[in-house]
Length: 75
Figure 1 (spheres, rainbow, N blue to C red):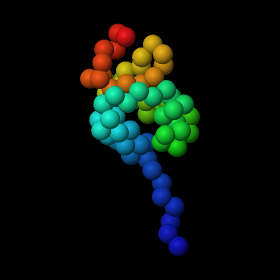
Figure 2: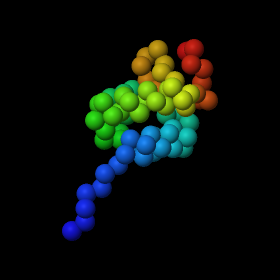
Figure 3: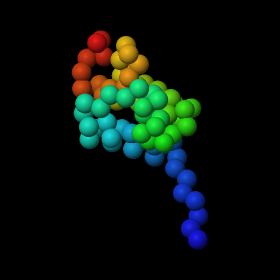
């Protein structure tokens, strides 16, 4: 029997950032991101907020998250 695998927030952060890099047009709402990556709401919001603060993502007026270099954050 193997021990349960625990994933840190840093691992989740790197995974989400990598997925946004691999799919430049990716545009997700927090609830879509939560379902896609099977995250608790609090974890998902914290990771997305951190990616916005580090200028990897921006939050569009409709609430979705998009890569900074995929379009203008002014949209």
